[in-house]
Length: 107
Image 1 (cartoon, one colour):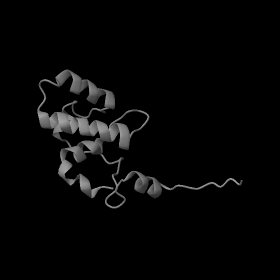
Image 2 (cartoon, rainbow, N blue to C red):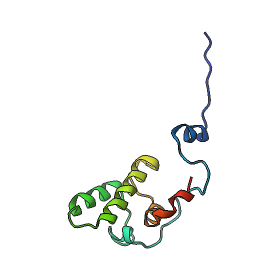
Image 3 (spheres, rainbow, N blue to C red):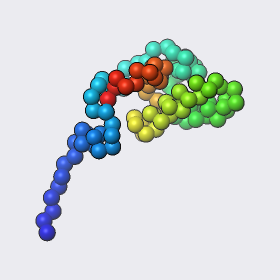
Image 4 (cartoon, rainbow, N blue to C red):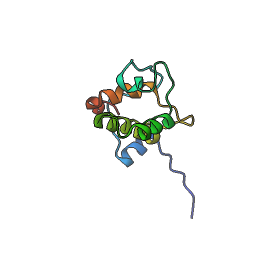
């Protein structure tokens, strides 16, 4: 039996797990605007996943339902789809979560 290497590209992986492959790419270097969800953690502050978890745990009884859901959605994106080693939440993701109705325009 011979051994063959099959090369997978990003498109193959995306199609295999059902991700969209058309639409706008998310520019992770872009700075997000000043919005409600980012301001929950303080102005001009670098937010990491741990801070979002802590906020949700400490404020779960007092945070509005929509805010809780959007922050949880932000965690899902930051932990699974666009995770990085530092655990930092990319600033632009706050804007995407803030306008969640238009999430379908991204690939």
